[in-house]
Length: 141
Image (tube, rainbow, N blue to C red):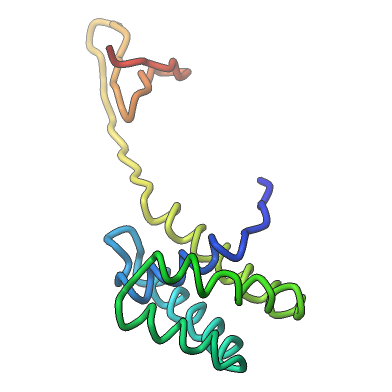
């Protein structure tokens, strides 16, 4: 599994969704906790610049993705370029959030089925037809 580098915009968006939008229904408790940690780390770094801190306050006050994208992300990009360790730290936290979100959204269902007449047993789950002994992709029409 390869892990792609996240942009400042993607990192800021994850933190925003976790903290400002309270997870928007897709965050697990662990992802929310990491999101808060990410927001605090970003906030801690950007508060060094009064204009960046003012932009963060506006994002929090208005819950605005537009302000985030237009005013906070540029400051975050600069901070990440100036401090590679900070960039690595927040990228790691963001990757953990992404992993938590994706692993939290997966369901696993197990069924034991016995066919009395040796007929093939078929089931459809999330767009795939499951046969004993293999998987066949099933497209809905």
